[in-house]
Length: 509
Ligand code: NAD
Image (cartoon, rainbow, N blue to C red; front, side, top):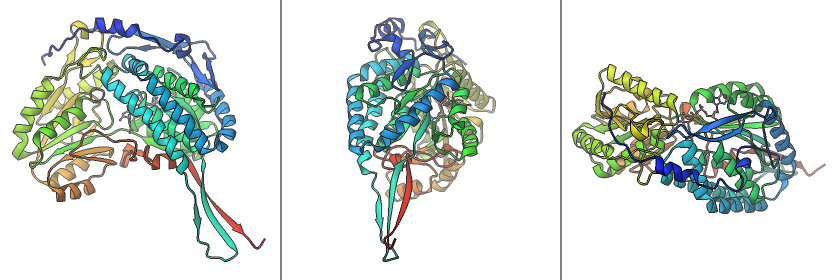
């Protein structure tokens, strides 16, 4: 397989990145945030955060474990008493303030996202702006946690149903959207009156600390939000799962880890909300606007963290009559994508998060090729020149692959587009649903009847019809099948942090 040379000048831009002001004090950014204080690990140990575009050290951060997690849970438990009874209006005001401060710091936080995650700066800024609007949405939703007065079947009784915050929430988040996945959890939790102990991914702790600083400066009281960091997630999650003060585990990450956490959470029947992996089908019918479909497929395949997103198109199905035309246009556009450091202007894709991720993607590609798949583009590591120290992978298009091969059954999590063809609507729906995942799916057609039939038949939590932009704050987001439990965002997003209580009042007493 031949390497494509897409080298761009990375080093100058990386120098620029180093000049950024990491918000007042570099020292603070390296520590955990517990009970309103910035603290080192009990052992004094640190772990390294590296830039996936260069392999260079970005920062050393406190390497915590169960001890600090327990401290954070105790602080969150204590803070819950007051935060739960703080009025929803007041909580909303603080969240609005957080939105405003995060907006002011959007460039600075986006630079941290680029440094530790690798995505292009423009995309990182888009993520930060998207993330901070969750503060806004849930600041407003906080005031709408209505109860109901229920007509009583007994003249001497009154019945009402009210919602109350769950308590301490433990949140575990991934590296691919280091800002959005955090705010999508902490904003509804804080709006509902819960307190939070957050463990961000070990690859991207700096963004989490910057968000904690935003909340601190917005007036979130000590203990209401805590951030524990660690190179090993297990002692931290064990404490979260075993500590009776924790009432809920909110997890975004792989289905594999989600299952482990669910089994352990069952021991004490903790509430769980899971946003897990995906295997999105992208279906193009012969009556679709072809150009829009190609643009949509390129965007949702390559331009979201270079394919490392749970809602990225994992399998592209094109109806036979237009397959040749679609493939030619898709490959032509994919060829033009620019790869490099997230600080390089005009870059479309950054590196994969690390070498393990790159190897996994390449193994899936090699397996497909060994089974008879055809390479239309890419299928290689990028290792020359400025790519030498980063985990870059060429945008790849594979043809003549089959539904049951690992490339179509597993979540690829990289810039690889397997394109398959189909004949009928019924056939493609069955093939699209033939997976254990059920997060996002896409269909392109101009036939309204087909829009209704196919969107009703697809077993996915998100259906993009002639749209590949993902979702927005106002609608709930989450998966069918092994893609998750519960929903984040929308009005449902608040409900998942509330417990429902029915009150029966006997007037005769
Ligand atoms: P991951 O499951 O490896 O890690 C996610 C988080 O869990 C990290 O904070 C990690 O430190 C922690 N973790 C890892 N192993 C653990 C263990 N044994 N016990 C406790 N915690 C553990 O996932 P990732 O590689 O960080 O993220 C990619 C995955 O996340 C993909 O599958 C992707 O689809 C999924 N994801 C889903 C959504 C969604 O909204 N559904 C959003 C983003 C990412």
